[in-house]
Image 1 (cartoon, chains in turn yellow, orange):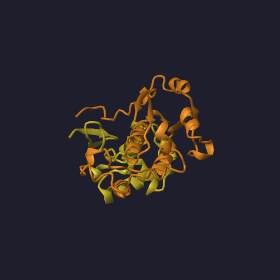
Image 2 (cartoon, chains in turn green, cyan):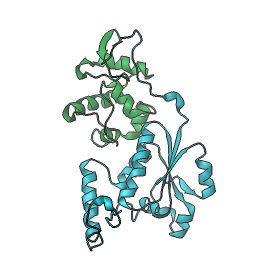
Image 3 (cartoon, chains in turn blue, purple):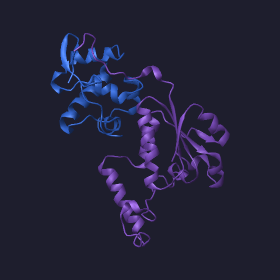
Image 4 (cartoon, chains in turn blue, cyan):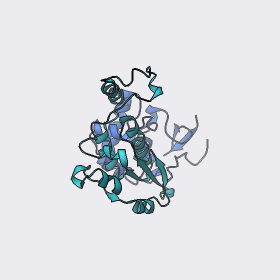
Length: 105
Length: 166
């Protein structure tokens, strides 16, 4: 597994750059991750998604899909596209320090 | 280990990709492939269009969209003896079984799936000839339909799109 330095912190990532260690993530790191992919500031709505994804991952052992975030997390799909533009599933996972969702929908 | 952080390439720069799916079948098992691929395309930020034609009209007809059926007749992949497949009740049973399997995987039913796609920005189009043939009006079809297109409009629409016929 490659190791990379983000915001002065060494973290383990996969070949693409997604964090591989759940516990290496922190809220401060999330801000750095967001900046890396062009999200200048994380607002309350971003944090709602991130908090849901992190806790759902702990329960389910896999990253929630867009549909699950909307159906179970109660965050409308439309707003996910506004918060994490163009590729919300991958971007929200990246900022939350989780792998890409494995499910198809 | 490198000095520059490893950051995923989300490919935001090639945002001009476009995909179109032609859904021409009205059976449950053939309704899902187009919708699932469209959902994948939308998740990648790709402009996505679905064109419903012929039996595919059942997927957006409010009367039928929630009641699509799966028949084991003529489908050797069900591994059911061919002589049993046409028996009365077989289609109902096979449909129930398939719906259960989909539900177990948290896959939405067709109407909910279409709403999900619309929420992701998917464009839904109905085929003019099929609308005329089945004598449908706009009120018969899914809310939020982008419009009814004839083949000439459709060909114009898919200019530059990767197109799949299902």
